[in-house]
Amino acid sequence: MSGSYEFSQSGLISEWVLNASWSGEVAVLFGNKGVGKSNLIYKLSKAKPDALLVFTAIQVGSEIQLMSAGAHEKEHEAYAHDHFWLDVLPLIHTRTQDVIIAIDNADLLEGHLEHFIQSFTQLLPVMGGKAKLLFVGNAKLEKAKELSQCLPLYVCLNPPSETECGDFLDSMHVKGPEGERSIFRPGFVRHICMATRGNLRVIKRIVEVAKQLAVAEQSTHLSPRQEKLVMAAAGLPYKSRPGAFLLIAYAVLALAIGWGGADIIKLPLPTPHWLDVAKPVVKQSAPTNITEMTSNVRDAMQQLFATWGYDVSAEEAWCEQADRADLVCDSGNETVINQLANSGLPWIARLDVENHALYAVVMRVSDNDLDLIINKKTWTVSRHWFASHSEGHYIMMWPPAPDGKNRVTNKSNAESIIWLDAMLSRALGVPANDSGDWTPTLTEKVKLFQRNEKLQQDGVPGKDTLIRLRQALGEAPRLINETTSGTDLSAWLTSRLPPVVDKQNDARKEKAK
Image (tube, rainbow, N blue to C red):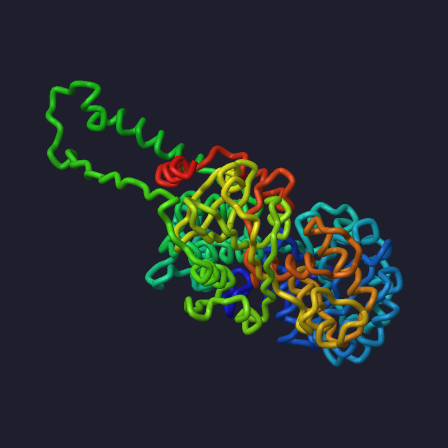
């Protein structure tokens, strides 16, 4: 969660867990993925380390292990699941009060739950009867037959309501460039709440992409086109069916009442004057031709820095200033658009337009067109036009490891290894290890993250893995890659939806052609 914001149900469940106010020895806390179950348990463990022991189920190769994740004395130690209770008995015997043993990510124990519970029940008298068992996982636990035999108490952590989702977004300071109001309209907040099903990480990802677009395009609120791009980047569909349904229902209701259909059905009664609303006159401004735009390398560098969240003056917008932001600035020549797009990062392209150089920041790439930012305005151009005017020269920024290198290995210094473990643990929602040693668990974390990001699963975090890691945590901008060969498959699938009509951008696109 962001800051100190807490949902109302979280407080009630926290009190229920700490008081262990359930009959029997076993309870189950379940809910949708990402609604904050693990975060709630970890916070309770840090607040009450004597009352709660937390272990997280992880898979190391073909073996399932339980890693200690709380604030107790043997933190970050891993235990085999089949010998778990014998190994943790000393921890329980040292307790002077009743203790709750929470097993997070308990879904991995499917097929082993019956033996796990039986071992706990048999050893309970040896523990002095002062231990209770709490499983934490997704909704599958509620239907697990192995659990139903011990008649546990089931408690569901529901997704946040629409109001709470809006409050959560406000707590993340989702304001426009001037800070006057939220960049999300209420209807889009409702759509976010329904589409994410309470997944807080996805909501945070939506906020990060929305902020990036708002800053890059100097928007006070998101347009329908930007909303679609935000949902595509989060791998979620953008649908407006509820809104269309409401419009149809409103039209049917208006016709049924009669006054709204006065122009179609001649009624004996006159139309009230307060229904005669004058239509505002919209002045159609002629779109500017992209060939008339001017943008030098400093303007584009200033815009590229802005996508990374840095507000620099044009005089300081140089590649040499990137190291002050802990970034590496690369430049070179590459004519294959998809090769640059696969990096997953925005880049500056130098175009030859009407015999003068034009520098643009590429923010989106698809099979048919690209989105370019030139002087804080977004232009949509066809790939053919871009390829015919691009000189192949590019400038790109990317974030290295703390030691300035483009990979972290078992030979890296302790600071870089601790940093990598902490970043991976945040991205995967598992406990971190601050020993500074390269452990087999760290290798498994790297492989799991690489699998989630559809990267090569070699267990070695190179440049691509480090970039994706920063992007997953909202510390780096993400190029919206909608190409069929792109790495962001979910964004490409979402791009197959009917496009949002944007007349101004369409006119600019035609001019660019």
